[in-house]
Length: 360
Image (cartoon, rainbow, N blue to C red; front, side, top):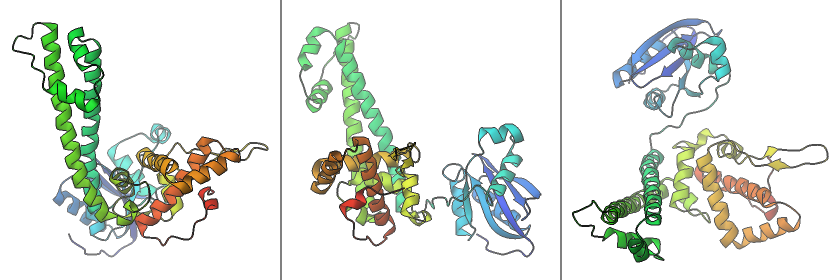
């Protein structure tokens, strides 16, 4: 990657990313459009794109749309070249209705957003956490497919002939899958009983294969999660599954989140004011990364059941008249603080039970 600098006025770049091509644009400090051009989404294309932008002056930053998708590799290349990359969200529908849409328009909008609405630092996607995220994608799809197979098995059993239905009645899931996988439907599948046995056997064997796949992925993800953030797994109630999700949400560069408040907003646990008149309260936040929010919720449920300190807090706040939803909100906010410190190696301060109900 070339690192040569160009003399000239300060300029800002913007890139509208696609699967096969990226459209780049350049603006000056006053926001005037200087030039735009399309480049192939290849290794050489990324280098040519950077050299072309730099040929117009001293590059301050580049706004890139879709740093988590089509623009992921471009963001990595630009960052490796020492360029400040800004994650740019797609303009909302109202703006697009007013200004129209095209690749040059979107590229110029991305460049303009750098000095306006866009302030996010993209995930670096170049370390162990990215590996965890990739493996978790495979695990998530396998988990959903296993659940779907189980649902189909139970649905077929409901309408199966009585002789087969009675054979598996009352069996736990593991025993049910083992029994169905050993069914012998025979070669003539014209009868409903034989066809049902054949379908159930295939679904059961699919369930077994997916279960083995999930076990293998867990064995691969666990050590990687521990390598990425051993302090995170040391926290009470956090296992490899929730740790993997929190790591994936934070990325390989969690320092991009400037404070634990920023992480709370990312995870959707920053309390939202819901006061009116003489009522002063906060409500649950329904924004942010819902997968990270779900991971925090799981941790809170574990602590509410097994952690004596958390159970004492819940009892105290319940006695004070706080609802279960509000108690859960406060606990999720507290866990987010602990998680942020573990992810960024921020020294933990002394925390009292009063701190379990933080402000926004």
